[in-house]
Amino acid sequence: MAKAIFYHKDGSGYKDVRGRLYHFPKMYLSRVQQAQNDWIVYYGPLMGLPSRYYSGLARVTAIRPDDELSEHFYAELADYLDFDRPLDYRENGGYERQLISADGSVNPGRSVQAVRVISDAEFVALVQAGLSEPEEWPLRTDSQAGTREPFEQPIDPLLFLSAGETAQASYIAGDYDRPIIASTINRPFRDAKFRQHVRRVYDRTCAFTGLRLINGGGRPEVEAAHIVPVEKGGNDSVQNGIALSGTVHWMFDRGLLSLADDFTILQSRQLNEDISHLLVKDGKARVPTAPHLRPHPHYLGWHREHVFKH
View 1 (cartoon, rainbow, N blue to C red):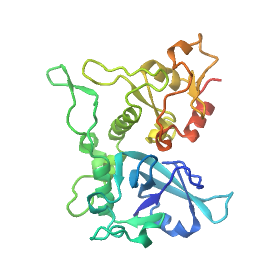
View 2 (view 1 turned 90 degrees about the vertical axis):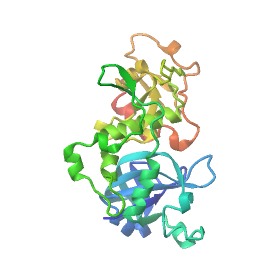
View 3 (view 1 turned 60 degrees about the vertical axis):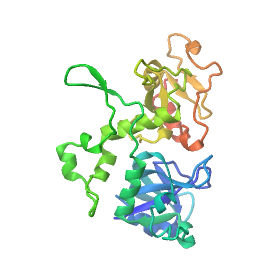
View 4 (view 1 turned 90 degrees about the horizontal axis):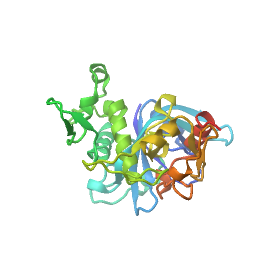
């Protein structure tokens, strides 16, 4: 097994679903096979930004041929998680030693490779940089005195590891002594990151109502909703998320509301009254401008088919 970089560009001709399927030609099959049952990092251009960036990580669970296109394959992915921010490939002198030389120049032969194997140390450096930002608006926790106090410190993955998870953690040799890989698959850590990312890209605003409610402590009341629930195979990509206030989140999860691919809000006939007056006036959900941050049609289609009450 080996860690790898997967190049991805939104709008390319490849049939990718970020965090779920990676479509690639046969020339990269041997490298993708090295990464099977291991972790990969997404890399490539992002809309509105001038460079190329590392933007998230996932785990390769299987590889299968594309039955519709010869000599092409799919890597099936799980445990996707967006980075807190895009990491410029030149940042800190570069994260990949074979991509950026000591003098700052780019290795042209390496840069054109859509799949690149990287070392454990390079992977750890990327994950530490990509998941290091504390949540701007963390949940409150009960203090020992019984009062409600904000959790102000950056999230430490170790706080969320059970004894069994710690025992199974993959530690990286050398100067790294934190169970980086274990933290990326720990549910409470991932829940906190998903909430952080969705609230940020939606500017703490409910996509269905347009409301931006902030409580007395400065924390947003909007919630981060999974479109495909984790227990149904959904991942923690912002493309599988949407910011919703509590009431519409409840209705969305119970299939009383859904979204068309053009982000038109759909109301179930099982609603006992028209709630249009609660929703944005034009009936179109307020979603991010950048395609890689918007709800993906794959997840929206699943919600309409399996959750929405037509």
